[in-house]
Length: 232
Image 1 (spheres, helix red, strand yellow):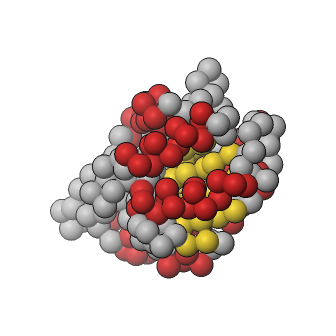
Image 2 (cartoon, rainbow, N blue to C red):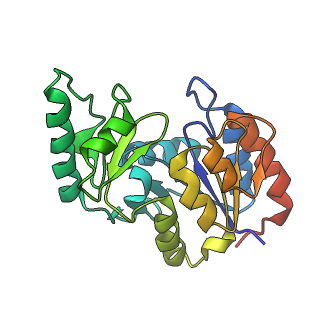
């Protein structure tokens, strides 16, 4: 039996133009009304996740910064698991690398991040990896941004940690995603699902691939597994 849903945001509960899919929100609220926990997971910042959780109507539990930060409920304090000191050193190396060619990185909300650092996909992720070949820092291309994250941190590790604090097991979760940063999350959860627009490697990690894309695929996946959910 499943007791909770863990879902990515961009590319999973959105439309192709990154607008929130209203069908996805209705589906999430139906689960919440039935007493099912819903956890949002993203590479975005904690403050963004807090606002989105309130607007959707969840209980406030989320994973942010690709697993580097998580929070249990609205009254809990964000838990930071990543090493941003290491990440900031790596970011400096990347900035110096591209500055030599007159290219400045477009950073995403750097003052609101506690674990990773993220910037626009205006440079090649492969070139970023080459610049950081001597460091252990992860370079994560989500399809929406390039993130630098400490080694060993991902949405799957965050799932293990927050599940324990919620009194659940990772196997109690249905996880739905689309990008490479969702692979470990899908592998760690009891059931891992992708939408049809997912990256091939993400599809390879899933137990079910929805026929539909984006938010419509999310709705399809939840409807398929809805009979397996049981309220706590």
